[in-house]
Amino acid sequence: MDDYRQAWNGSTLILVCSLPSGTILAQSFAAMFKAHREKNTAMTARIQPLSYGPGASHADDTTPPQLLRAVAPLHRSAMGLACAVVCGGLVALATLYLVLRGPTLLEFDLLSQFFWGYRVSVGGIFIGLLWGAGVGFVLGYGFALIRNAALWIWLTSVLSRAEMEQYSDFLDRM
Amino acid sequence: METEQEQIEHAVVVLNEKLLGTVLGILFGSMLFLATNFLILKGGEHVGAHLALLSVFFPGYRVTFFGSIIGFFYMFVLGFIVGVVIGAVYNRIVRA
Image (cartoon, rainbow over all chains, first blue to last red; front, side, top):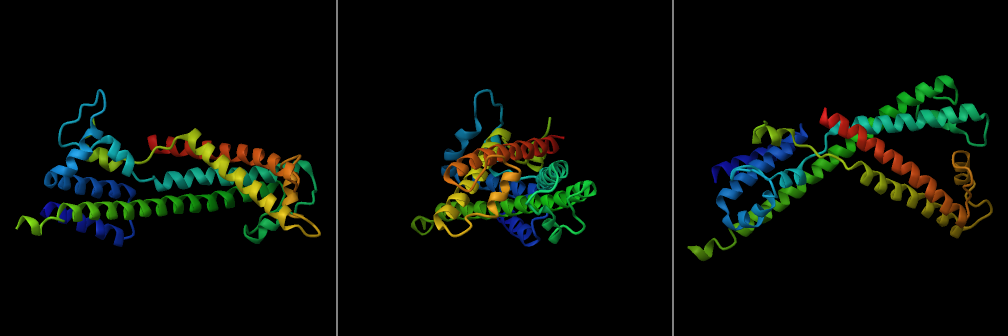
């Protein structure tokens, strides 16, 4: 029970410390899961079949890969970079298209209200690329951060419910 | 061979590129489809004067019901490409 409490308190502390690493989510969950599995045979009976797919060679004390996949966090920097590539590329391509096409009714220059220095020009392609990449990175990173936090909250509620179920008949056994 | 602890530490989600592309495609397409039809139903003197400027990038797109279908396909393709690129770049970085 001490192990379980340590893992639980540790993971709470991690959230308070602004979720420094997404992998900590999986770590804390795995620690809690391990402690839970040792203490709760009923829960283990439900979860164990997931861990043994055909050809799998997991020892009894390993965390099921399916479970890891289910609770694995998004890589924040990777998501940020991916969105940066896409957003920067979209702004640059749109600008390039407008430069090649010539004047249109569309006043794409209005983007300069947000992207300082941006213009529909050859130089604006690179400025737009940088601005788009910056905004995309922030969006992607923020998305992953919020998604990981939401996952953590969901895991916490699931585990607390499981814990309450485990001890719901505590008084009956006295 | 990684130990369990290492596996847990390194575990991150890997994205399904085509699935992400399809989801974003449907999302983007639906957004333009709904926005166009909302403006059509709302009516007025100059229906969708600003949204119609999308035809600069999407030839054939108009703020009409038929145009909203054309817009859906354009945005679906755009969303699909965006999703596939995000998935591919993300997966490449994660697997590196």
